[in-house]
Length: 241
Image (cartoon, rainbow, N blue to C red):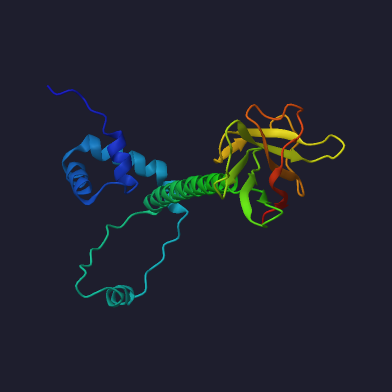
């Protein structure tokens, strides 16, 4: 003896038109041969009859299929869908709505991801682009010797443009002056000309027209904390575009 099975979900899906062609054909064969399953189908039809009754019967135009056939390619087979009541159409509309809602959610997520990536990229580009630049020049020859770049995150770098001659026992010292009352402050000490990060962490943020200069000092740096050697190159910052 086989155990009883619950055919109620299948009967409901049949009434609502949710079965594919093969499953629907099987269900119709069971309706004809299985009285208990047929009663379950009728029970579900009765439950949904009030909704089906709200749909007015509309007779299709006589030339409907001719117009449909003419709008399709001759090579495309025309398959007639099984007739479904309002419940089937309603259920399919819900499925379509769910798909559309899911598509909208996915689109929104993708747009959010793209926006986040775009913002991150813009932030990365902005972080690489200096907001202030100073070209340090030799007053005597008017030759550019170095570039100072100041970034939005507080980083300041110096990039030499020429090979500066540093005698034995001497060093290159980089200074900045943003307030004449306070005076210049050392922000870097180099044994040779090379790209380097300048130390401005304890100083106010870099601004426009801030002076930077390179002097030749003793190997350990200026003994007074102020520039003592000759000024090799100097220049003031300007805002970048």
